Image (cartoon, rainbow, N blue to C red; front, side, top):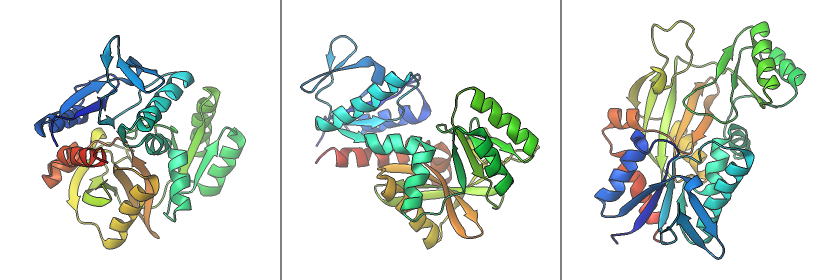
Length: 298
């Protein structure tokens, strides 16, 4: 079936590499791509959706969500409800609204994975500074992270109690939730595994950048080195099961090689794949769009 209409949700930059790749892949397959920001959509009941002043978007077959953007509590609540309204109106949302929201929230992600039998790091989440300090005293070397974030931005490794206390006190004073995670023993790398439609598409090692004193993050965006790898059955099963538990059509799963085996740090609901495409030679955007078209055909 051709000539269908698919929305692509962006926030600030429609020319973002991943967003642009998806738009090009949709158009290359003979469909219409309509990029838009959620804040530019108005909804009416019964099911009518309008872009800006007058363009009717109610005829979309599916929507690819890359971000819900920044905003107040009311704005974020509206945008999530809008995605759910799309679904109720028969427009397929990818990744699905609830799955997207849960994967963007590291706390909700780890809770679901732990319940599903996936190994996750020991983690403290809360608003009690003294309880967080007690957790640090118990586990030692930790990473303090934003509850919602990407590309390792805002994460602080705190090896010393005084530094840890100051970082967490500052976060606490800003009214932010404390998310403090044990730094699990591992090699100088982690694994990014990419799953689409319940199948492992490819995986790579991400190595800590060389020549940057004190750096511990492996994100390629921050200078980490990417290297193609073939996962063992245990690690492949972990990645696929993670996507299954979180009900994600596509996801980049971050796994560390702990002494006990695979340990999942997070699963990304809107991952980038530039490095993985480079090391695998796979047109990942095309495969993601194939999944969108397939799911929108129901």
